[in-house]
Every structure is written in structure tokens, then in C-alpha cells.
Image (cartoon, rainbow, N blue to C red; front, side, top):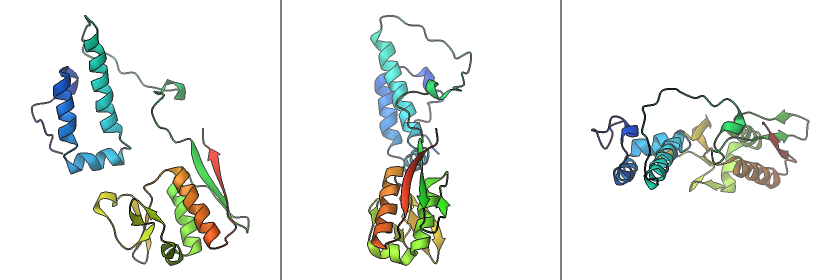
Length: 189
């Protein structure tokens, strides 16, 4: 990726808040950065915003020391993660009437299992929209090409939504086709 500010080699040496904010705005004009940020669940933009907040905090103090990083710290306990950092806490467990249970660690795989069981074309006919596109579609949007999973016959499932939304979709499919699925959120912590 070509950076908008080629002269910026080490962001941690920049303590000028307007320069940092300008750099953040310029990054959001690059489609490649936006895509990488979406894939990384906003970790790049969040990191830069947190660094800007840190610099603002430091500048509010009368004096402070700026030192080169000497040691890397590795967070090992879940309690050491920042409180506002989003972590996956639940997966979905789907129990079919015949007793079969699907509870994939990757939640979209559970959704896809239900869609295949119900029939992809049947689900497509329901007109369930996610990110302004039918849940099951022949169309791949460039913005969501990573999130649209191929399930065969030229059909793709839009998986770019949170676990709660996937649960509601599965429940809607089950109700529409009288499938009798039991859908539960299961803690993975």
C-alpha cells in the first residue's frame, strides 16, 4: 500500500496532533486502507485514533519525557486487554429437529450450514438483505468480496454482520420454512 505521506517513516516520532489527524483523514481516502481496516475489524484506524488520544493526553501535561521503546510487552491474560477492545465472546449453536448440532467456531459457517439445509434458492427468495445486498446472491460486491462466501452454483452468502444478526437470520430462515431449529448463543470464554 502506498502511504499518503511518504515522508512518515515512524509514526511514534510524530507528536503534532494536526499532522496525525490530517494523516488519518488522508488514509481514509485510500480504498486499500479502508479494505484492510475492514478485514482487520478496524484495528488499524482504532490504533491510530488511540495514538492520537495518547498524544493529546501527553500534550495536556506541562512536561513529559519521550523515550524510545525499550521493551515489548505481551498481553497474556484476557483481563489485560483494553476494555473497549471487541473480542468474540459467543458462537451460535444450532440444533436440528433430528438431533444434529452445528456449532462452528467461525459463526458464518453455522449460518451457511443452515442456508444449505434450507436450500440456497429458497433463502434467496426470502429477500433478507445484509449490507444492502441479498443474503444469498449471484452478485459479488467489490467492497465485500472477502465477506461473500461462495456456496456453489454461482451463489454467495453475505457474512459481514455480527453474531446477533446471524442469529436473527437463522431464526428467520427457520421460521419461514418451519424448520424447527433451536438457536442458542454459547459462550466461548
